[in-house]
Image (cartoon, rainbow, N blue to C red; front, top):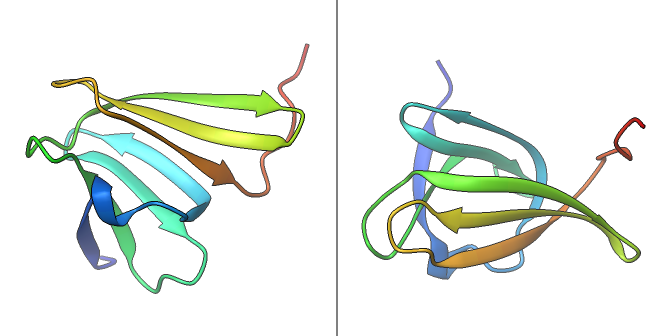
Length: 85
């Protein structure tokens, strides 16, 4: 089983997301340059997120909002293709 490291949202700025999945334990991400899977934790202590992929002119983004307090962050989403019509 892969190691999972909790990362506070405040320390996640600038991460480039390679892969993500959501589970009962929270949002798990694989980021460029990180050797472990990361579980994103909000400053309010929760790990559950409302998650959206957005396809912007400057490139795809992963937008997360805390399900508890609404705090928000967005990340570069590397390798994501455009959604199918």
